[in-house]
Image (tube, rainbow, N blue to C red; front, side):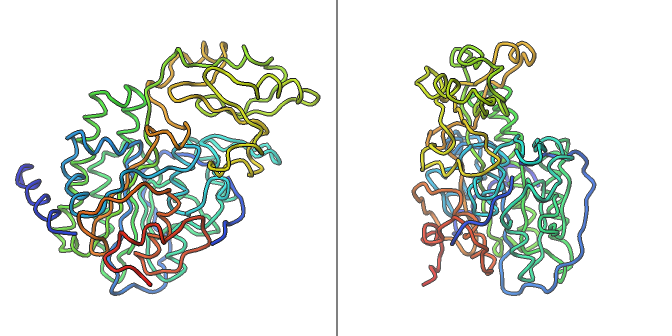
Length: 432
């Protein structure tokens, strides 16, 4: 089918369609091979439920939807529900937010507090691009939605979602893949459709799908670049491919699509960098992380002098004792977080002169900044039989996605930080 005809069919179809936190745990990695792995079948099969597909487009700012590069996404939003924005959890980083989306827990509560961090008790490191470090289930607290679903008799399949390759509480999704960045967006869609083509008795009811090309383009070239525009068009075409695949299988009208991002992105500037070695003697601190969010601890006997240097005002960053972080961030109680947290102003980075010389290249576009910043906001679109049509809702926090998914799957959610009442008005039938 030629693209103009395919898009016309999609647009026509879309136009007419319409707790307490768990205990703490901590960071993860993006592994490398693409070998598909299938777990033991889950007990039972669902009936009378729509399929639910959770799609993440890493780094997709909500204003990208209005740039004219994503006609399929725009059509889904117009025929379903669109949020003006969705507020990511702090820090506005990939692994913490992806795990928040599927657990409904703030990073402080699920333990993935950064893309990179250390456990102060064991000294072990979590590095999000190192599968050897992220495969340890003890990092991952809370209960991701695929486990919640499997406990209640549903089958699940995940495409590259952070944490889904880990045996959390001894459980993996029924079908999953190790992360493979060489797999194209179209190939990812085709693999998900293969899972959907399983016999009805074995077909999963819940799926995840992950695209990272927009985020990569934003890091390398900036959020306003032509490369980001090209990545937006590529991902939109992949979503069109998914919609077409569902229509060919007569499943489109029976599928709830929830399309989100983990965070936005902002242009960086060297003029906004803070050099930590110009603020405090590096021999007096143990630095866990540089970047947008710098975390560190004073060396023994140096707490007073380090706090004097860091806790005062700075031109391009702000620092806090972790116990004194703003309450709105829901961040600072996890034992994996070092004593002092420094956050760069939007567009800035925290580094030191020696590290800058060693690294040389820094991202042109970044995230991780204050989750109240407009440029850090995330995407939310929902479309399917459970959702109203043509509805635009106000911004809401991404912890509310987990209880929404549980409702769509007709399952009881685990303990979480979300509020189903916030998202209930999106639904055609609001539970009483």
